[in-house]
Length: 178
Image (cartoon, rainbow, N blue to C red; front, top):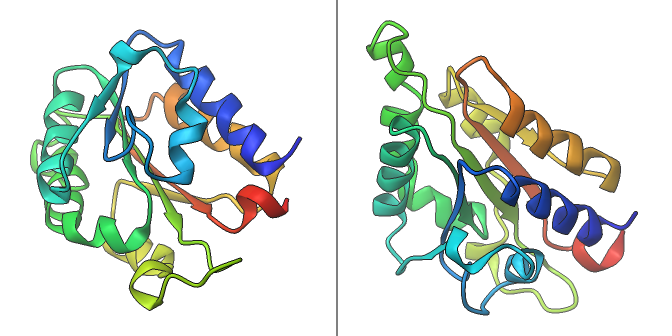
């Protein structure tokens, strides 16, 4: 399978679970390459948000605490940086702070911005995978380099029963290259 096709298959798989909801910018309206991977997800599972990254991560945590499995979409790492407070100080630490009483599970979908065929400039192509891994104690960060890595990463993120959230990191350039 191709990289894009595996992403679409993974989103369709996630959408089958009654607990999932997809939130972020350009989830219900066109706007990013990730939008196209959601085209067959039922409209009632898509929650379009304004550009308010920290609020989005706060909503992600709140939904997860209520038993939903939010798939919170940040098209690029550079946008997810605006939500680092909620990610690192709240979503990642709530299990530790509550002595395991709260074990929210969220799936954070982000990407390393595409540089080809047009370079969007450096504020859109960051890869902060290693830095976020170093900051998080309970969130697992999985970078999907190959098409064969994609479905297992999203399947693990949804089916895991260890109370951990997962960040899945995609490569924008691979949507059309692999």
